[in-house]
Image (cartoon, rainbow, N blue to C red; front, side, top):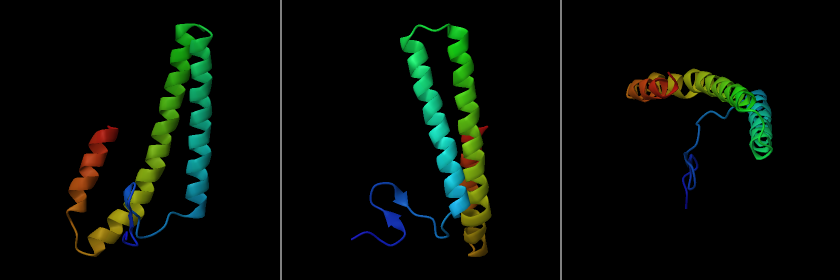
Length: 103
C-alpha cells in the first residue's frame, strides 16, 4: 500500500497542496502549449516555411519556461521553506540542481 505522500507512479507528493489558482493557471498554460505543439505538427506536415515553424517552436519553449518559473516559485515558497524550517538543509542542493536545469 502506498504512503499518503507518495504516488506509486510519479513519486513523492507535495506536503502542502498547490492552490486551486496555481493548478488552473498551470493547466491553462500547458493546454495552450499542447495546442501550439499540435499546430507545429500540422505546420511540418503541410511543409510550412522553416522560419515560421522555428518561430512557433520558440514561442512554445518560452511558454514552457514560463510554466517552469511558476512551478519553481511554488516549490520555493512551499516545499523548500517547509523543509528548511524542519531543519532539512539538504534541500538547498536539490534547488541548486533544479536551477542548473533551467539556466
